[in-house]
Length: 384
Image (cartoon, rainbow, N blue to C red; front, side, top):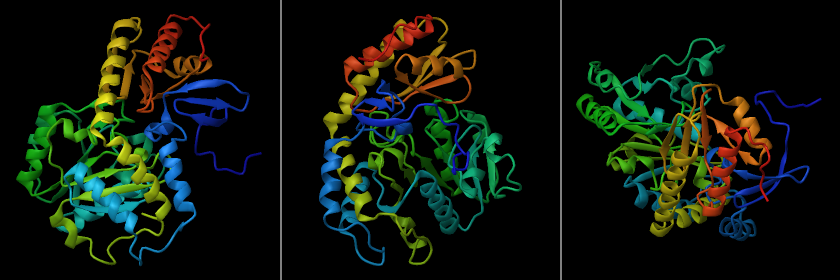
């Protein structure tokens, strides 16, 4: 028997080795990995540049308390600040922790208590971030939630305009809802949210845990919309698989996170910072991001041209793509896995594709072929 809590629906394959986009299971079967650890392995599996940085740091220092200055934190914070336009960075270990920090900071800075989020959102599974999440299935069984959250319908501009409460500390959203179905926000809706924040004296918090670190072809997805958030959270792709998260905020918020207001034992430790620095120095390069967008344009074009009618819509941005169906996709995802392509759902009727940003055009072509063949009930395909 397993001594692990059964908190995950685990597959019947164990992945034991990976390089780039290709992973192998315990039986030697290879797969194209279009999950990437759920948008974590943005540089593919075992990227040499991150491995080299971690190897160097392993011979120096693994961990010290945040009571001491850590030069690598300053270096990574500078890279994130330059890429985001935000001034102050707090390091933690995950997206949920980054969102916890954002919620605390918004309430502390504004002195207000209510935070507006959106239906079908996902912000984490700690008590506050679970409460911020607009999905009943995430709330079920845990009793009273943190009481200061209210959920609005996503992409409903009028619902935002109708908000009149003054006690709103922040409006928190994903520019593209990931777990909720790969749903991009419309430009007019996102603009309405930002305008409402300014009207109410509330902070705009953008959750870039899944969409950040180059996933959409920009450092952060909000940059496609010319938004000016007050707080941005990120994690997943930040450390190429090494646990690390960050909350970024405007300069004027610094005084509200003074010593003793928040902290993290492991947040920003030297190993995490070494991984993050190597990752974002690679991804935030302009030529790299241009190539991500070129690959995304090509991939989406091929999907839209070649997928059979069973696939109703291709949506998303960059290499965060959802394929909408009129039926539940669990069985299709299982068939795709049998045929050598790893994908995951985003809700019951959407297949989510999150390939490494380093995926090759040949691998994109293979993925399209497997998708098309599987949807046409051709099971004679695989990965060489």
